[in-house]
Image (cartoon, rainbow, N blue to C red):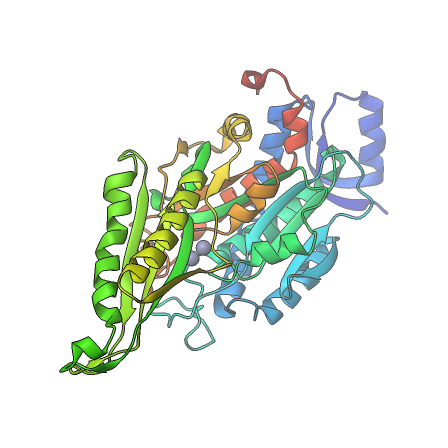
Length: 436
Ligand SMILES: [Zn+2]
Ligand SMILES: [Zn+2]
């Protein structure tokens, strides 16, 4: 009896009688042979596999979309991913509470590549009319993380099918709690990035037309600090201001003073956002409160500037409060995200390697935050975006909108991108990149 092989890839030219022997042993539907095992051949092979897996990727994405779970509660999502990876042939382990790390058994080599997808959803009530809507009320995959998880599962299949071409171990990271929970930070603290040489991540992207791949060298997404200013004075009746120390008056001065850091101390060519949209104090028109507060956000693409402005905020709050007999303090959220800073030479090489995927662009910088930044502080790598804006498919709503939708026709491209980058040490070894 002949064994069934749907497709046979023969990378190098072989003797005719060797092929005859193969044909007598196996029932082969299609042979790809006579092609040289060069780099473009392998890349095109990975792309072809991704296209063939399109319906698998879409079905997984729809499953995740129907079962959204938020930060550190992604228990059933993680179990589902883990089971799927084990079926595909990976060793798996749980990480950062509700994350999954997968590796290919017995893979040796000097350089390890990590590929990351985030798996968490948002506390948003879905308002789309797709027939695979969220089954969990008030929870929704409205950022595209369902697509990221599905694309990396697709890549998991492709990578393992072509593992003989890998130059080293692979680590697939299905990360929990990207949306404000700093899941990446916890994964790093657990040691999962030790011995990783390169890391790559991908995000569906509203600001690019569908199918366009975007990235850029250096800072691409901003650091995102949340902070709380507290001013303590002495409360009392408004009729007797001399018996009180009014922290409201001080709060107003500080609100204005902090904006002067941006307008008077920062190079106007540096993008910085300092917003102070939340504040409070007295509950009544005739009571001086004993305490007021101000909550703000600081975003910048420059890590040195970030440190400078954080220090200046603290100085101004503490010293200005003191000048008016109050006690001022600032608390920065310890889980704040740094800026996403892509490794320039890996960006440069990746842009060439990924050319067969077409439509690759240097993207604009953005002031949104992304906890992939923590990985890039530890390990060289690149964060990519995959355009999702498509009027024909109706994917016109931005991330975190209750009508946000993913353009499923481009998901194969994400799996292809992940798969190609899994082989990065192979491409990096090349000296003449323009030969690809
Ligand atoms: Zn998001
Ligand atoms: Zn996101």
